[in-house]
Amino acid sequence: MAPILVLGGTSFDHIVTLPELPAPQPRTIHQAPFHEGTGSTGAGKALALTKLGLPTTLYSAVGDDAYGRHIVADLQAQGVRAHYVVDPAGTERHINLMDARGQRISLFITQSSPQLAFDQAQVMALLQDSACLVLNILSYCKQLIPLLAGYPHPIWTDLHDYDGHNPYHQPFIEVAHYVHLSSDTLPDYRPVMQQLRAAGKRLVVCTHGAAGATLLTAEGQWLEQAAVPARVLVDSNGAGDNFFAGFLYGWLHQEPAQKCLQYGALCGSWCVGAPGLVAPQLTYLLLEQSWQQHFGNA
Image 1 (tube, rainbow, N blue to C red):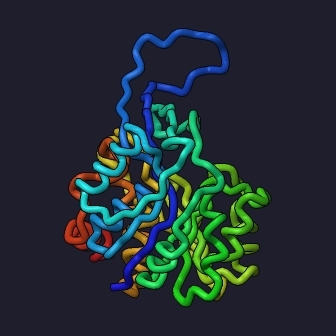
Image 2 (tube, one colour; image 1 turned 90 degrees about the vertical axis):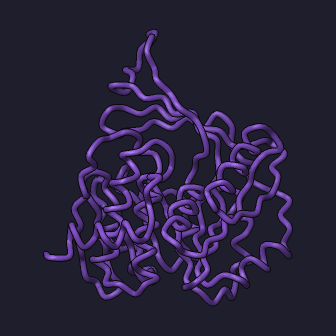
């Protein structure tokens, strides 16, 4: 199986769960349950891919602080192979306000440095040892894009809540062959997907949360996939990254695109039913068995 390199995306998250997101007015909220721990899109993808049995390496930034040490220890304990560059600005931290429907407001209370002192030889060695690259849209990852010139293997990126125009995303779009994004800020997402296809992308996937996902192939074929309902909604953080991991698992196993979407829907469903970035029970055996139960007789 192709070794995967995930570039960028680790934070320490403080997650506050409320019945509904607060109205824009001064108030005191007396009961605000919370939990905290490792977050961000690189950690979520690397954890899910690792649990699915795919050989995965994460390269990301952390601070020389308690939050960074927590991330390093946590991912190591969960089996993630990782290398880190130290960010002098400290570990990126988020406060995520969640409501009962899984909607989120993310507050970036500290951010990673846009430029970091990367060990270029180390990054090049990691690239040479990989056969599939996941490039996350962290600011410091733009610094690594010139190193990808001539990279002979597939490059995937996740644009998250791209609005179809933001120039920040353009360097990631230009270098990627396969694109994921969400429709959070795209009520009319199909034209944007078509623009990405016209720009030469081999595959474009747009997720819609509880409304499922849409895929556009290079040949112009549209596929739709309904979400798999979660038994209980605990924490929707990481659901998109788990969908991405499930989809990529299927793609690397050369499964049909519809089946890849179904794998993604299953992984996303399990994620929202558990605290943390991935469901503890996630394995490739569970995924294959559950696919058979949900979709095998369709």
